[in-house]
Image 1 (cartoon, rainbow, N blue to C red):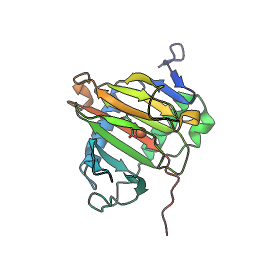
Image 2: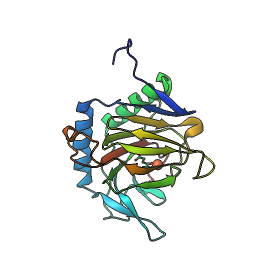
Image 3: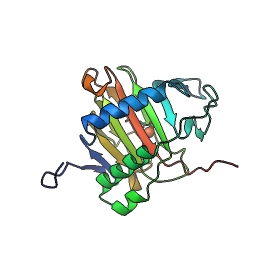
Image 4: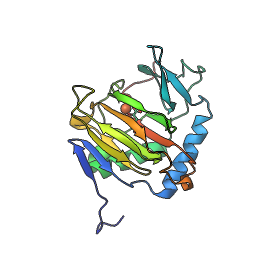
Length: 221
Ligand SMILES: O=C(O)CCC(=O)C(=O)O
Ligand SMILES: [Fe+2]
């Protein structure tokens, strides 16, 4: 987009920034294809089982580090034990550009090196309860990319999973970044608006969300 027509950028709360339509249709198609490949292995996409006995309604596959409740591992200890796919350099670059776009801070963007991606697939019934992303040992921002059906995204506060919160819609191509004072806000997805996505992305139905994060972890030697 040209500098004459800057992309709208909405600060929902300090450090929580929504940039609608950030990904081009081509980038969305390429991300869908990459996620489809990762969903097939080495660790297949699955509904995560929680220690409480519950099963998450979203399906998740990870890249770089595998998330299982409530930690990260190089191996999918709760799925098939396989080592997760490598985190590709192009995804690091995309994360840096996302941060530059959201915060307008090139230096912070250059120093951002995400090492895990959680890829969530929502069918029409899937929801995600209010939670904080706090299993990372780093407080670096979380970059969220959405493709497919629009959802209602609930941005809460850092103290409770209840009100006050703000509901926004995340549509295909939207970027959302939460960092700084909003890094540990409770957030969730109460609803997916079925049939709002464009099949040209390669996703016939449902919603894909990719969060890029810095685990702050090192491989143990
Ligand atoms: O699907 C979304 O927009 C949010 C996903 C999320 O909060 C998470 O994966 O922790
Ligand atoms: Fe989250």
